[in-house]
Length: 293
Image 1 (tube, rainbow, N blue to C red):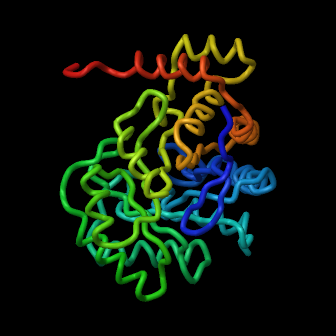
Image 2 (image 1 turned 135 degrees about the vertical axis):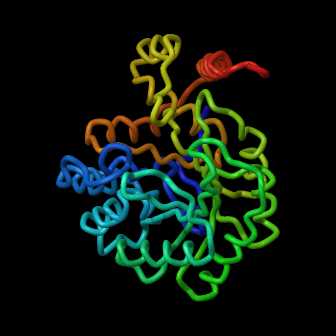
Image 3 (image 1 turned 60 degrees about the vertical axis):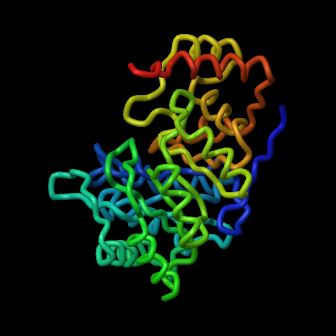
């Protein structure tokens, strides 16, 4: 089964295998990394290997990851699409706290601009910071209207949504064009299947966060056995499955390791046949809890 390796994000053709910068911070996405020089090297290697879509946020660190990106990559290549997020903040101990007021959103955009060294942000995702993994219902109109004002001021070009419900995505489209949606989705987390298909009809990218499971990585004996049989790593198969799940899926696996970076990016060259896809679909289904559990 063949698939396109590129898709359009905010009017830019990007490689569908991108890079998420969250792991460039210290433990718990807080504080500085153990080896800043290595983080710089990973970012530069990512671009050398064809990455032209990087996901970040100024609440990673906080501020530290954007500062590393600026050190490593500025002046930024013309074909690089940087996507950042607002809607959360960190306290002195690293806890994740909501920052959803118009004033907090404006301040976060200004922080991202300053620390990335930019005059305008290409894409800003509104992170609905109710829970780390599960979105909560409720209108996002005040937050999106605040971002719409920042678009009018010329500080932001495009707006996306992150950690949101299906209804919130629908509401978002009534307020402004939505450039992308970033939600929790992977081989074993399928809550957004219908949303992905609807976004594909609109030609809007869907960007899974934690595509490899996040803080609790995907682990499956069946996945490991299949990966060994095919000569790939389990994570490579999980990424390849996502690329073939839908053409509008863009991936942003993160790492601070050069070896893992190269392994992740190599997944874009894996083509899965129908029988392998069926096995992976079965692994995902067996790993998900049954209704009512």
